[in-house]
Length: 257
Image 1 (spheres, rainbow, N blue to C red):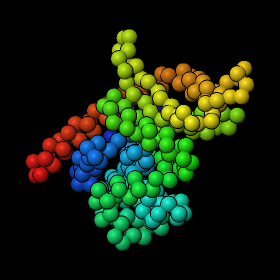
Image 2 (image 1 turned 60 degrees about the vertical axis):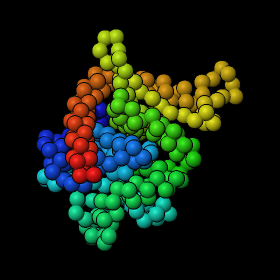
Image 3 (image 1 turned 90 degrees about the vertical axis):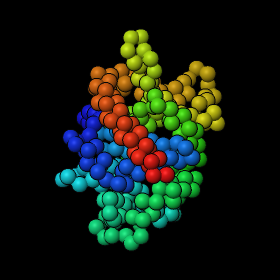
């Protein structure tokens, strides 16, 4: 069974800070709002408006790679599949260099505009994607709330989650911190639009599907609470380092504005 874990390889952040495209990514503002960086298990994800601008940023043999869904580059009607940015070039799965793609990725104004322009497609950092207007609406609604400094994660995967005797990896929409008694409380949010039919039941004696979903999540969180708390302690330390790097990059950018 996969365990809940969050963290990065040693020195990965140091390696990233030597890369111009990463520093530009941290300094970038979309209508005044920074891009959201999420810590995963040995990789990072970067989001804008509830969509993964980079699904995975990871280190392999000392080199940094970043993957993104090719549909954001070629268009939503093309086949599903990731492309890889190595800091210099964008590569297809067969290793072929895609001419002109790296220039698009480096031009963050253009890249973010392209991703936000596909309003009928939302892609997360794994292979999850959706064209369901309900899913898209819920992600976009939550995105405006995710800019608060207390938010420490989006689309939190639940490894080893079992439903109907099948192992799946559902995701909790948002995680943030609040003052606790004592210490700090980790708060989990599942976003639903009021128009979502799963909020309602025809029989008042039965629970709505959303209620059952949240109760399954609650059981998982309680069962794995020690590992989850430990993982978020690690994640918060890394996010603090990323925040310091982000502030430094913003200041550096302002010096040359």
